[in-house]
Amino acid sequence: RYKSTLVGPHKDDFSFIINGCDLKAFGSQGQQRTAVLSVKLAEIELIKAETNKYPLLLLDDVFSELDEDRKALLLEYLTDRVQTFISSAEPLQTKAKVVPYWIEAGRISERI
Image (cartoon, rainbow, N blue to C red; front, side):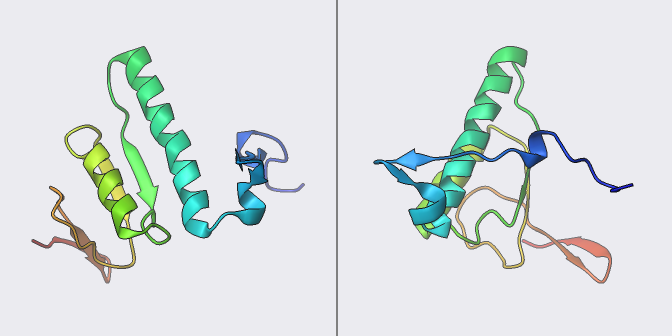
């Protein structure tokens, strides 16, 4: 009847309290994104501890709200550790070991 699930983990809300302040109300977009990424990276380490393997990580437009330092730290953490697919509307400017692919008009091409 509703054509969607009314309950489940996708309906849950996390509250991040930093120095007594709710991050959702008082944090910047970058601070909120960093908090969520911290939980995701902790989850990756938990999976690694349980299975002895890192999971495949999919990140959609993860860099849009991060400053350059946080972008670099995230890429440093992921490089040579976790196979990661990152989608982005903008080209990534980095010295990290990444292989960029472009999707244009339904065609995939590698850009170096």
